[in-house]
Image 1 (cartoon, rainbow, N blue to C red):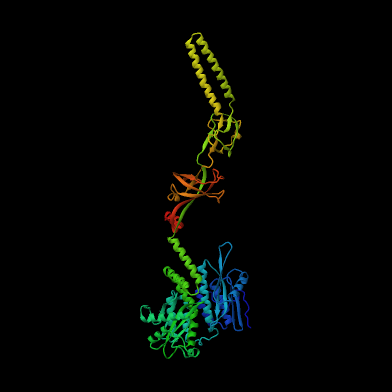
Image 2: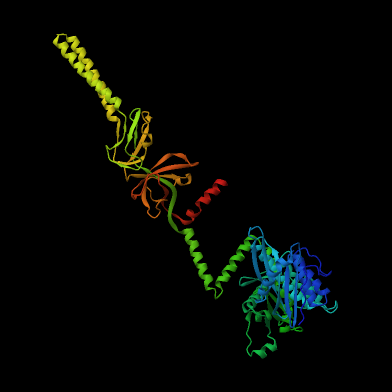
Length: 628
């Protein structure tokens, strides 16, 4: 068993390998190599280097088995060490050999800035079966990038599979067919699928002597005619064109070559060969010329249909049809790639939708149909369904009523009996100011009252009415002063104005200090009476009004929500935490005993029913309006 030795990158590349500028130029280069080298082993090694250089690939490898001969080689380009890529690519190539179809594996660097893809395409024997694979490493930017690279690599591999037939032949041995092969190798110069199809059909007709050659591209379950030899333009309304397209679609449905009249050798295998009515009609319209349609595959799918019409002197045979298929099929992927590259956005969308519908209507795709049905129902519900619209905003618990207790007069704080968090009853002593000086003033004034009483009695006894009245006036004045002192003594004992909880105030730290009149001492709130202050952003103000209900969820106990209804919306905005908000006051109708003033959470306001698409997108729509 012959086996070639692996080479060290591009160091062993022969002079016959030209440096290509892009993958498109590699098609012509592969044919040039097939004409210039003398062995399949040499051709495949040089072809590998041609592909590696065309893609600027850091590493590529190939493995092919021709009967007892194994061709195995690798190549690299660029400054990177090929030893870094070799183990991974060789493993990927081994995996690709297990199933003859294009493979891809996308790799991304940990920092997310670089992406590479491992791509592989099968190599086919000219008779049909896969005999090996080609694998390379390419740098990519997105999924569409590596998909295009994979399609081009598949086309290059099929081109090499076809071109290997010409390795080792002399210039004159190829004969008249050589010009057609040279024309097909120049696929990269065509700007549209129509131009490429025009070149293929006219070359086959001129070189192989057919009466008519047509090529159509498969779009979903239909065939789009690209070129008919002898015609510069195709009139799709013409009866002849319509019949030809119908015959192509009959071949697409059959998924195998169709020849009419059926060759004699087919009747030997099958006593009753299938009758293809559309090809029979085409045969009748062609005045008894032989007609045939050949499905051209790109990977596992049929991507194009080639139809032929030949005169009686050159009847179509299965061998001749297979030979033509082997010549043309390597370029089916290029035809599809050229067509896709020239599509506009509307056509791209239409064809994508058609492909999706076709994939769903194909038998055996039950899972896809179920998923599509679920997605369709979800999309319809999203567009036309409704849901309860809720506005969620931050909020804080505050007392519904709050009583402030302050210093009744300037003086020394003698004692403090309660502190923040204590429950108090109405009239309960909270703190006490030093009133000893006031007690002395009251005793002094009491003594002065007694003196004035005696003065009045003595003046009346002496018969001096004026002195008696003066004593009475002095007594009344002293009595007023005494009442003032007594009231201050009473105020020196500070009592709770209501039943409630002390939520602010801890004057025990100030005992012995001189406090001015009006100094805040306590804040007392009645227990169980709370309101919520909801901070509404500007975008939510238009949807919130008085009377709406909602649920308060505290950060302390999110599992125990409380209900509320909005009592009023303050008319002016406020700045809180560097944000412009509107304050809505809501009465908390149900709250647990654990509720404390100052607790924060979120308030979920039930606004009403809205369309689902509006709930999901109205913020984005508003943002677009603001920006545009």
